[in-house]
Image (tube, rainbow, N blue to C red; front, side, top):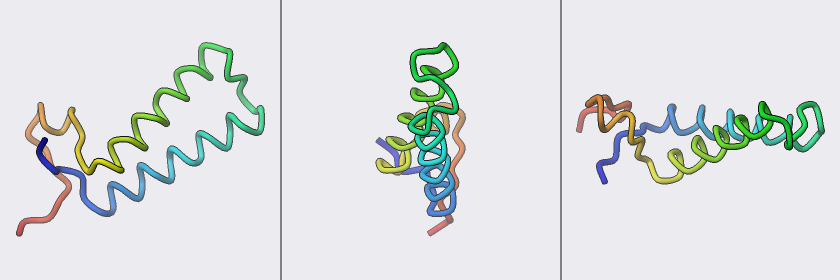
Length: 69
């Protein structure tokens, strides 16, 4: 697994995941609705890719947000 998520990207992903979770937990979007399920999946993907520092889509496309070392 290639590390390809930089610190700024990681922070943005975690904030987005948290924001989506708050929207769902406050009941602004019903978790049982189609939109709610899609948002929950997106939040989980954002959180997991941020915590693993690796994004499969970045790997496929050859992108990286990590700085050159």
